[in-house]
Image (cartoon, rainbow, N blue to C red; front, top):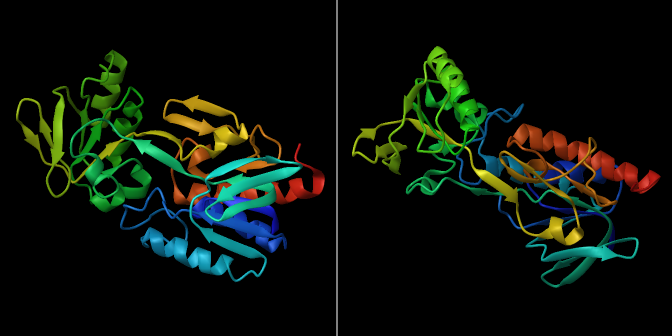
Length: 296
């Protein structure tokens, strides 16, 4: 079947984009491999009307609502490849190829964490990247910030609002005099001894000299890249940021390839359910308009 839009990625941004297209009475296919970025987190926060709910429940209900529209189809599985095909696009899935006039990339990102033993096992549970998503639930307990680069200064200056904060430099950089003054003003304690590992039920930090610092939560910045290779296959321009690589989009979420939109974490240097839903809605509207007025 020829679809008017193929949405690749069925998490918050993808479903939001598909919903706008469904309501515009367009034929939509959503392809989803079921790998949400926040799948390790028990609860989601900061999204209006859904605060404190399990992330999987939010997605499941959103999918059920989307699939009530008879013009929407859903494929559970990977999009294996994507390419230009005539005036539209062909996307390879497990049992052949599907074709669409437009493609929306809501593929999410892959996170690369600092190379510290014990960190990855706690990702999304007691090791986090977003203070606004997880800081409040630490109940003003002991918070750590593990530096991945100088950009971690931002974390270290924000997080004292959520609890007493220790900034583990871990040999990544040395704050200058102005930065040290900012950290002192915010009450953040600087720890220069390298981190050997993260252990314990929460996120206790064991230092190279054997000292152990107990924490209620640890924050760090991952390096990100769009999941999979579809953006590259389609020829979408990627851009580098201090946090990693992202799909370049304009103000209405058009990529550098006419007819291809991108939204969610793969197209924004920030991770939030609320932002992903908003970006997805705009990408869906933009896709619909391009079907009427052209992809340029």
